[in-house]
Image (cartoon, rainbow, N blue to C red; front, side):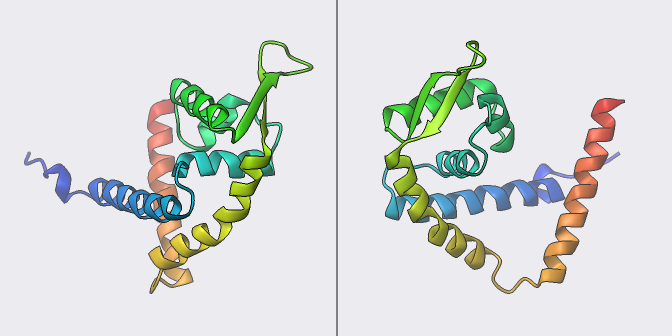
Length: 149
């Protein structure tokens, strides 16, 4: 059986598209907020919407392992975007809160994100987006079925 080169598969296309979008989005964020990464911005957005999230829950939302998430939160605390304290009800975990500096960044991010999304989706119809989401969800579901069997 002849194996297709990785670069000839849909998975390579998906991965390269994600990487290019992340590069594009990071460049646009860096122009306005010098020391903020795309992932750090996502952490702020999720924490702003859901302030009680645990570090593990945040990691799942931004597709990071626990070690990477710990390093990212440490960096964000050092940069004064977040503050971390012992959780009042569960002393085994931390309460992570957005600082005033983090809130300032949250005011700057929406127009950048809108620009990134609009620019990257230019010329793509809502129907095409829905079709793509459906296809990607089928791939994800197929992979989840295989890992659970």
